[in-house]
Image (cartoon, rainbow over all chains, first blue to last red; front, side, top):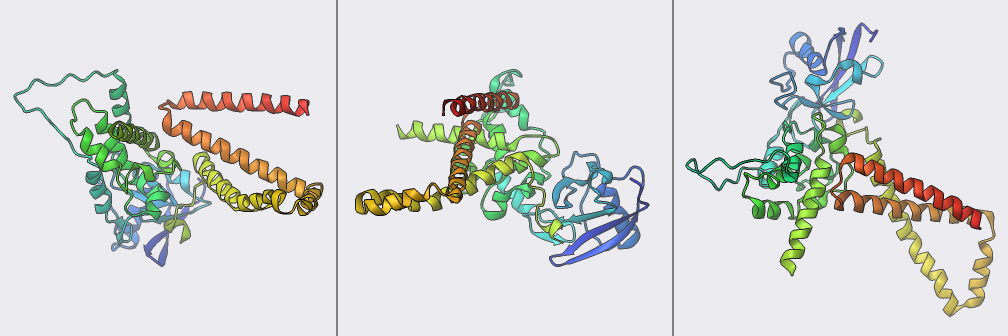
Length: 237
Length: 117
């Protein structure tokens, strides 16, 4: 990057943007840029972050129209000339500036039965988990989700159907369905086969394309489609 | 402003495959009533049908036919892709190999077909 000053345009409201001049540095993430604006130009700028190392999933924003984890996105990778456009995550209600209300996202996580369904007590033996079994491999594929909502913001199906549970919640359901320690099979299949469930997915693949942890929610949702369909035909017989 | 509001980078293969499948399906759905209407002329008005069939020798109609075959091919392979992707629990490399094998055999079959006619 050769520019000394970055032109950073931040979405402040539904129809109001503000452009700030931010000094460019060799090593600078999108989150660094937003923090610089808040600390040096406009202390009223609201945004959210916590860990700054890609663990907590709280700093996701739209960067030049693409949802990204801003703490692990180097500005040089996204800057267009010396300009960058930063906005709040898509598909979620905006609280203020770059901070969105994540409630709908987490509510759907629970609605998809993304909770532990245990059957054992503390007095029982710890159930063995076979690391190489086919179901464990499926479960492992999705457990690194950090709930950043990047996939949810990337999804056009979420944009057109507010009831759709979305990629992250459905991937969690698929993970639990394959988890030997989880006993919620019936509840999960019921939750994900309803009107907002996995069959809404059009396999556009933006969730998988933009997942910062390189997970594959689209393939998890395809798994749910197969399981719910199998379950339907078994019950029908 | 647009950039921050809507997702602008849909330019990835999966999304393009989705939109091609959708649009080709819509275009075919619009074409079908016309197709049946012309076919029905065989029963109702054979002379008019013959007149219609003469039209197929015009260059514009030939190009339109090419477009039609293209739409059919796109929609068929889009559908097969979707069925394979959603119903077969394959890993990513397996999918790539399967797509490559299908594309390869399709090319060979087309070459054979072109030689045959």
